[in-house]
Amino acid sequence: MKNEIDFLLHLADNALIIGHRNSEWCGHGPILEQDIAITNIALDYIGQARNFYQHAAELINQQPTNISVTLTGNDMVLPATEDSLAYLRDVREFKNLLITEIPNGDWAQTTLRLFLLSTFQLQLFTQLLQHSDTQVAAIAEKSIKEVSYHLKWSQDWVLRLGDGTEESKQRMQTAIENIWAYTGELFIQPEFATAACLNYSAIQTAWNQKVSAVFEEAGLSIPPKTFVQKGGANGMHTEHLGYILAEMQYLQRAYPNSEW
Amino acid sequence: MEQNLEKIFQDKIDREVRIEPKDWMPEKYRQTLIRQISQHAHSEIIGMLPEGNWITRAPSLRRKAILLAKVQDEAGHGLYLYSAAETLGISRDQMYDQLHTGKAKYSSIFNYPSLSWADMGVVGWLVDGAAIMNQVPLCRSSFGPYARAMVRVCKEESFHQRQGFEILYVLSKGTEAQRKMAQDAINRWWWPSLMMFGPKDDESPNTIQSMKWKIKRFSNDELRQKFVDVCAEQVKVLGFTLPDNDLKWNEERGHYDFGAINWDEFWQVVQGNGPCNKERLDARKKAWEEGAWVRDAALAYANKKAKQKQAAA
Image (cartoon, rainbow over all chains, first blue to last red; front, side):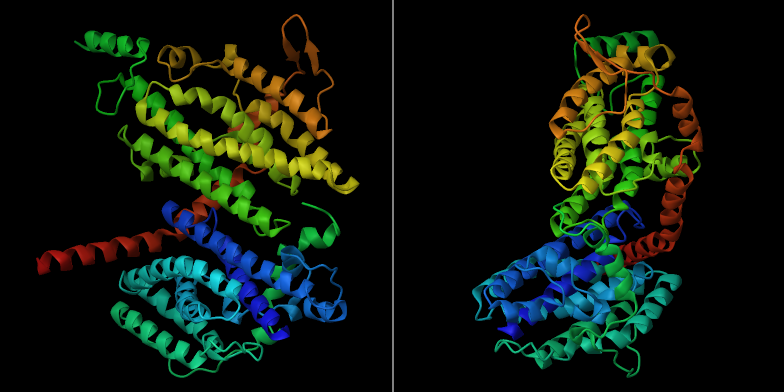
């Protein structure tokens, strides 16, 4: 059960952190319609995070107390809730992929990151439809509808910017170089990802096909083999995550035990 | 000829027939509407900033989701208001330009800072509340596209106001620190909210003509009084107070009396000297300027695709 709970926290943390990053654009987007789109995408991700956290909390609370505490983190108050899991764990307890936490950069980097991540998520969630826990399968089913749109939207931007102007092509190519080192981590199966339905090498094959096809159409090139930055699933993060959590968790930390 | 058209136009208005974009209208009517609708659209867009300021810091996932949805609604309002204004022969880019150069105004309320989470409650309750008071009559505006846009805007604003009140209600039942946070937010936003109804009637130069054209249905002071009467009762439910020692029920008038508004502050903020005027405008200009290459690329790509399609046909 510990593995399933950790895996749920991994999925929830991915959604929460990418949702947080995308929400930073709200009110500052380059085009009003796109400001609405990215805010809506952020909202989808916060919704996914809530579904995964709620289910994780449910499972945690079914465990004997001594086990629940180690599952939730050092000084957590039980029972666990979606908010205690999001707001009261620290950097080393977060299990999100590094690609979700790196800064937004410009519009090219933001949309490229979403394209690379949602291509991965679509494959992953499709496998989760077969998960033996029907609640996980149900959340995956709902999330697939959203992620398919995120993928379409971000793919359109990769094409538009890759094949737009000289400047946009250059910016997209720079974004690829900035982000590429964080893509290898997508295919490293975390120790706790033990569900029978999972097959990370199949995800990688499908991801490679999709990304190569879109890059080719956009006239973008994949960088030569780069070093893979990894560790997010084990709580080894970039320095960026601490600032995200400091901002996100500030009210819960400054005014403990309050209802909002 | 012109006189005749003007008479037909005014007759229509008097009979409550909506004016549509292709109908003849006096140039001054068109200009007044462009000014008012674009100012309203700009207010929605600038208004995203003080609330957007708290999205990444919302205290629970539920609050975060609601706030995201709310700010997204404001962007949507901006979008259909810009579209309504475009039917009068001005482009969105021209309107942006007027905003960025300071030629067009937006609601001064958004030039105040959002300093605590309780501000999200107060902005919903008082700021959106005042906006609704102003906007419900606009659903009957004589100009069709504006009136229709306002029907939807008002529905959503009424949800915003309730969620704001609910934030404050939860804070009012919370810890001492939360209650203090909420009372402080009410104290800071109350007077600026009253200023949202605009200058006093005898100093509002556009009111008479706008009422004759049924762009406006009630005067600034009428709406302000109505707002005070509602809020003075609602604040009791919260167990907080409004920061006005002169606020008291006047049996004879059937309304609450209230203290004097600091009109000097109002005009200072209108003229650009509010606490956040520069920041708000700079944020919008930055988004616009830094987005130029994105818009250029999108346009270049669309043109390329259109050409390819043409060649293939």
